[in-house]
Image (cartoon, rainbow, N blue to C red; front, top):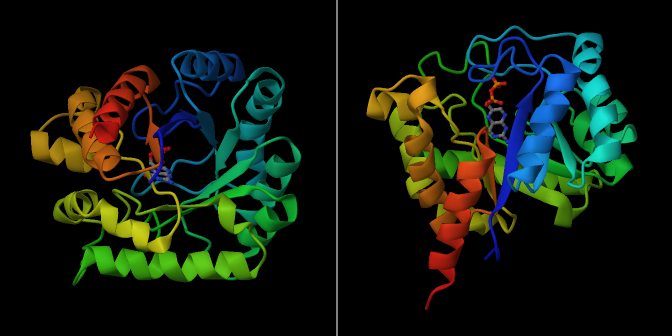
Length: 267
Ligand code: HH2
């Protein structure tokens, strides 16, 4: 089991992300936010150039790179932590890996022909394989599972094997059940409750509950009121040995995960 849970700070350089959309489109504001997250204890900063919220509109490769590169180029020379990029496009992955990103986070879980996995393999980068049912456009249209944990495990197991076949370093693969991506409230809760079953895959686990709508539905709260709900989800995840948590508010998450790590280590 992982020694210490790592905190991944989310930096969306998009106009339309569900929780921080529009705040960090300006590269200067984005760089300030990234530096703040590192000061607060982020282990990784992850930049996203296309929103994946339900119903979000896809952007072209040029648009996505146009958002990412000014920020990535500034950050790679100043930040002391690894940079990840949230993209599912192989062309974007190739360029950002050349420009200093070390990890690619693919919400499509290297589906399809898997060109993205080949780009990661070629660059010797890290890969986050996330589960999503459908696409952001249709994922919340009546999702249904017989056994959500088994189905997500089967998908991730298959995609891990595929990624290793095309040459991604087995030591650099992280798996993520994709909270909020084509799941009902009870599916998200079951995934969190049974997260320890994902250790069967033999890979570090990442989860991203931060401010998501299933928290809002349980607590009947808008996005800006979901800090404590997020912290509760981190509690469930860290006590089951998750290796990475992906959050918008790094400072509180660092405190929560350090405390949970201390509890986990107690005999
Ligand atoms: N959640 C979001 C985006 N990418 N990647 C992983 N691995 N796991 C997640 O849970 C995950 C993810 C959605 O959150 P956010 O990036 O804040 O929103 P948006 O997609 O609207 O930019």
